[in-house]
Amino acid sequence: MDTGSIAWMLTATLLVLFMTPGLAFFYGGLVRGRNVVSTLMYSFIAMGVASIVWVLWGYSLAFNDIGNGVVGGLDFIGLAGVSHTEGDGIPDLLFAAFQMTFAIITPALITGAFVERFKFTTYLIFLVLWVTLVYAPVCHWVWGGGWIGGLEGGALDFAGGTVVHINAGIAAVAAAYLVGKRRSPGIEPHHVPFVVLGAAILWIGWFGFNAGSQLAADGVAVQAFVNTNTAAAVAAVAWALLSYIHTGRISAVGVATGVVAGLVAVTPAAGWVGTMGSFAIGLGAGIICHYAVHFEILHKIGIDDSLEVFAVHGLGGIWGALATGIFAWGALTGSDGGLVNGNAGHFVANIIAVVATLAYSGIVSFIILFVLDKIPGLGLRIAESDEDIGIDITAHGERGYVADGAD
Image: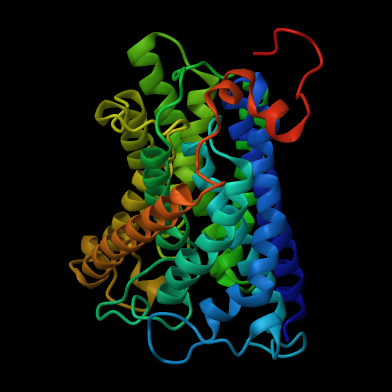
């Protein structure tokens, strides 16, 4: 056991856990005032439900390697046999706790696509099924001894480009399609300070997300730390400049979204690229995600992804995964590097990983949601009258604000 690494990983675990409340504020500020409590609760309850699923069977399905390459076994149910004193540098139990924070925030990301109209009780069931049937298998493919991790050429996903962001991004498309459009789409954010606060918490927490994924207090963690900040900063400034070019103003919500886009894109690359590689990744994320939001790509085909989850997390994750194969640094990967060094192996392997994640998560998420929608007494969408009143009152019996006119 390395006590320095243990101390760092305990800290990183707390940082990543804190990201989910940050996401709650980020999303909560973007909706109408009458739905702020429900939007916060989508993320907050995930900390409870996903934690329970992870401890009981999720970790086992993701990390109990039984050699089939598709999904793990059940030897670690209830974290049985997961030691608090043995492991590679850090205890296995600490690794399980760190990975649990990823399993918490990933389904919470999806909720931005269906805020203001999704049944909270159905969401609780969806959480259990999605973490079990989608998140855990994809996590196993990439990090748990599965087939993506073993691809010839070397698929690279340092901290969750495929496992977290592409996975959640495409599931968000399925959810937005099946639940249908809001009755009054396109409402401006009701609380911009919440959005900026949430983005700031995410930015800080992401250092645990990315640098913590090295699982050690060492030089690669330092490189991942610097890369994380660099990509976020470049994407934020790029978004600000593009916003000014198109509108003559610099939107606080836009800059906050740019920060998140940069963080998303650098996630798969954090420990695999040099500093200038992260600069290029952040720049690409700022441009790609800005125009995806600006042109409302899903809305144009009738899919109301309310808070642009796919535009930021889906496309940002895809760009980040591909860019990892482009800018991979041989000194960090222990290989011949990426496309910039003439090596196509990582790039091709990451293309396969991206396509597989999009296909599996998209199809299985669609099936889960479709079935839930057809079960009598469940369904995905709240009643029209409830949508007009707001989910805060109808589902939670509470208001986010006491004063009238909080919309």
